[in-house]
Length: 300
Image (tube, rainbow, N blue to C red; front, top):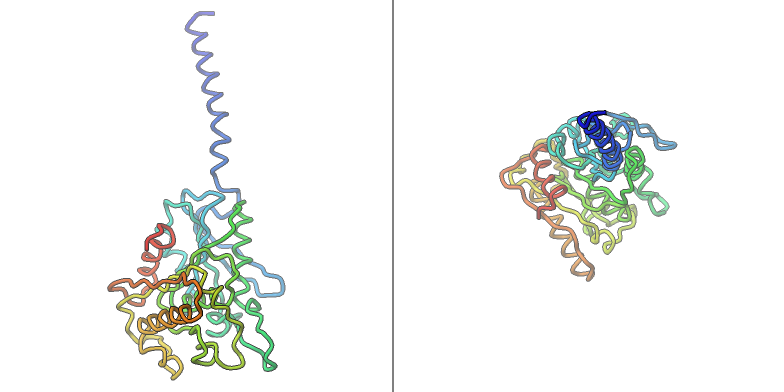
């Protein structure tokens, strides 16, 4: 055999070895075969409850240990639109976005979705805060983690408008949920963290669920407010809501100030913060861009 032929064969053998060696390295960083690559929809079944659709999008570099971000839709119950708003934001990231949809047919009005169906009983028994829509969030996180073959111990949350009502109440009422960071953007009204108003506007009255300020305030919550969110479209204007402020911006400022005051009076750690987004009104796409800097880039 000629010297040239020997060199050629050695080169081919070396190339084959390099390809074989490279395959495990690629497999170690690729997402599990889960059906959560790209974008799409799956059904989430929680035993004994209505099945809900979940719209998802994964970043092009998403791995099995990707950040899991749960995005809560607004009053229009348009989870696909909310998912779409995050598609470009996570395109080059190691992130999986999940947008569950809670239909009006199965989850009624604000009480069934935003408020999680939470209320005390006439007998004054503690409310089961996960009996309604709040009870879908941790199963959703666990289902997504299983689908991608991950080992995540926590997830992040974003909600705008009615979705922000959901998120801030979830942090307050289910404070042991494994939420590492949450952003509640432009909520229409709030569950105030004191007994200055009856539930669901505050923790006064006999129907209020249990609230643990030390545990709730130890969670990382960002109250995000568009400085131009001062209109009245689709804004609750009954007496209880108006006592919180005349606009979404004013109500958010009041909510954060009262939370900070309660934490100070109780002498407990306070990990919440408020962030204003200059010039932005009631616009979930623009607020999502601001939230991405906080949730995905760690901006303060």
